[in-house]
Image (cartoon, rainbow over all chains, first blue to last red; front, side, top):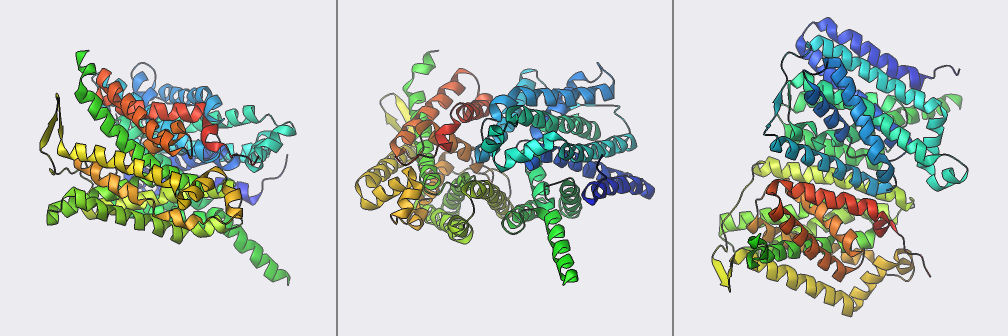
Length: 309
Length: 290
């Protein structure tokens, strides 16, 4: 077994440290912020598996969170709470497996808009099902305490971070990188591209399903337009671009940055927050395509070069 | 089921179809010539709708005139985006796949910025206004004047653009550009000259704004629709795109009439997903030199 590199240990330690520190303040506000932060970290890490490592940029990752949340409310009362959340994760993974084969045949920018369309399609289907059932939002009463949810979400963030680190270490990660660089060449030299892509897609759907279920438990109700809100997908992509999606550091940095920004701005200036988000997305794509993590690497390598001369 | 045969429904479908056709024509020209997936496309439509709204509300200017101003504004916005952000990318040395993926993300950022700036300036609440709302009777069908104007302008403008591109030298060079991007670059066709085409979006936007609700977030559905239409009609096939717009208008109007208005989005996104999955090569295909 290879010894862990800093790019592996740093994000893990960062998540663990934040998880340990926030409860010290003893206020529900910090637990709430931490809950959101870990939720985003888990989402962006999951996204990184298929979109960062394999280069299939998904602009519809909210669909998995929405499915997870929907399964949780559907099974509410019928199964224990945590079983419902796990079922939500499994349902999201299953959905990814089912749609993955045709969807992953579509490449490049078309995959991006296709995933967006798929998520919107699922949203309107669920809205119509709920309307037909005569449900306009569902309330969840008596869910777990904030603190319980906090620790569950911290575990999800750690699991997501570990998943990216582990994927990069095994054959799957090398295969996905080959797909990203040149899919045709990868296939020619015998990388099982279809199987790898499908597996990565399903893997990247599991945790978002769980996170979506926790989001519903936290807010106490389920409303399809909110659970499948495309802004969630957009935020995931922006966090990944800002942080970088080469390895497990980027998602942690990107999520941390935007969660702090949103705490400062979202409540009072939601539109200003969105405009800054858009500007950051454009700026990073144009000038720092590898995100903050890439900038740090560049800084370190130029610093090292200067020291050597 | 008798209502399905009514002329009223058919005219409604034709109006929607002609608007879709014109909006998609704009995307066909821009995507076709630059291979940039402009998902801020619909936001230029939105800008046109607001221009019409404010000119009418503040200065009582008829939408028929306002749409010219809206066209100019949308054309300028489109050109500014091109010269400000994308020209350097296109002439750079990056591989085309990289440019496509990047341009999509950049356009997405632009779309978010345009929408939220509009929401910031004019609030996010939807608006409507009453202009050109006298009813015109043609046989058994009665339609608002505004919808009749929309139908006439969209069809007329689409036809004019198609004919222009078919018979003028600039038109030929643009079509050559769509069909053989690299080859036409080698023989010296200038991409910069098509940058004014977003003006049709402003025009269409004003017409849409008279007939439908205006909101900062109204544009995205039109982007989706435009993509469906140009995939159905074939990239670079301008007349085919207009026909496909009509087909989509018919599918939507009759689909909704048969089921319910709630299913409109399911229908549109359903068609969107199907065409992308079944015919991704319709858009992806790079025509080889033969």
